Length: 69
Image (spheres, rainbow, N blue to C red):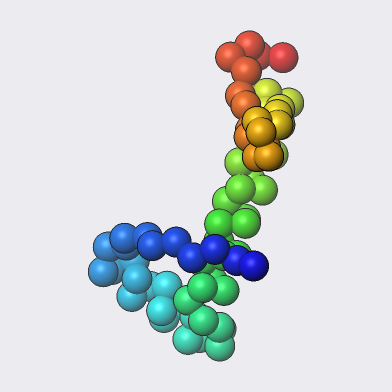
């Protein structure tokens, strides 16, 4: 089940999100979820191969090495 988060956004950014959501016939949550997924995918591509995933308890965390491979 998805978890809810509270995020503070500047009014201008929220207006832009609402505009795009309306034009694309989507809701705010859909648009923000997609934006975050795309950001994380781009981040992973830009950090690889420096990024590794490690298990800490039941959570996986991303670790960045300082060395340039």
